[in-house]
Length: 203
Image 1 (cartoon, rainbow, N blue to C red):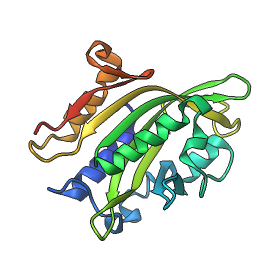
Image 2: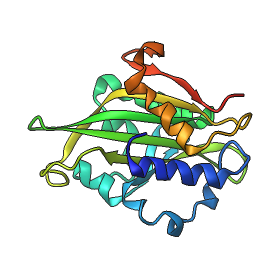
Image 3: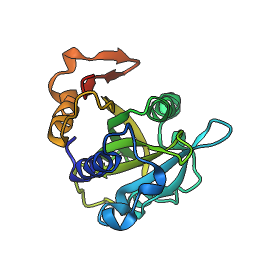
Image 4: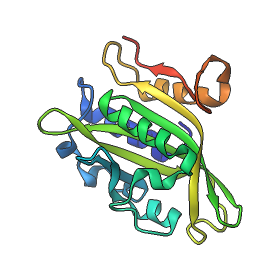
């Protein structure tokens, strides 16, 4: 994890869940993370199985130059990557794991923006997991940011973090593990053009 927003969201989620696998969605207190809200979003699995934006912060919508509420998560990615992005989001919910992704945002004019996403699972009051609290943050601030919209995100790396409580790790250890995508690519196992790194907490 390289962005402050990513690390702060991870810290909040990790603290909120305590000794559980994940926090409940009704435990999220917006006032506790008010500085992060513009860069946050919530994804929700629909009865059809589709995953859509329930909410999206102003900075996230500004990156794409449109309102994302109600839009499919797949719409952020090129056609060849959309299914894989949805599969990763579904895995976050069903396996109650975390996913940190690095992705390059592309504009119609060819500008590029390195970004970082974090997907964290949320539990329902009934005990299931059907939502994701996520963040999307740029890793640089080019002059055209929020004026020229991003057309799509192209995935560059993926880090899966085990959310189990067998051995508690602090945020520094998790952030270090996430950074392995750029430092230790040789240890990853490849899934299409992404690499999954086993990390996070040891059982």
